[in-house]
Figure 1 (cartoon, rainbow, N blue to C red):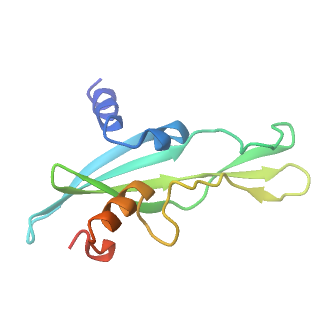
Figure 2: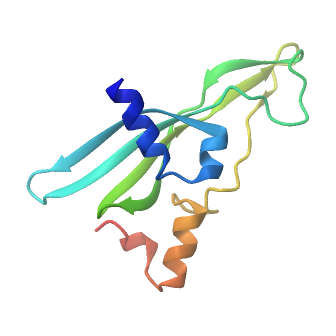
Length: 131
């Protein structure tokens, strides 16, 4: 019960668009004693939904791609990292692999588009975000 309540609370802080495609599977609050730097790590798995335009009879889910880590808005002064796993889909006959394409990850960065836009508006360099 405690875990479900915590996941539901975390979902209030995550971008709505992200939660349409992914579900929170676990999270950790981590800290480094020497620097007293605290951070949240939220693990998200892609929902089992085939990319649009492909037939469920021709493609099958073949697990997940390696996880990607993306930085998001801080919560209560703590850095937030989203560890995202996306599904890998494979054509049953040709073995061609496909994945969903998500444009809410900022191009060329490891930040969500919302955070990247926010940092651009404040003239803050995203490369120095969590230092």
